[in-house]
Length: 118
Image (cartoon, rainbow, N blue to C red; front, top):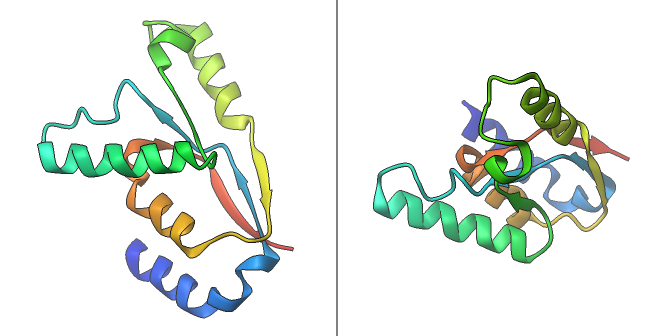
């Protein structure tokens, strides 16, 4: 279902992507990227994430290093919530490959991402 919705969006708005803004707090938890068990899947995910990070479109960091090792603590929860709330606006020139890579790598990403018509 989700894949069909993304495919429809990309086909329908292909020529209008420059008029959209992305509000995003997308980031990758480096503690999890490449650690799902299936070697081919992990490599594909790592490559997608590296490309998005290199292009400056997303951040990657270790939750353990940034938030601590106790996911049940209040400090950890508040820190993660703050990170998720820290959205960046990306205007104009949103490429199809960026949207496709975000969709394909969603299982390795932590995100709140909204596409907004400007």
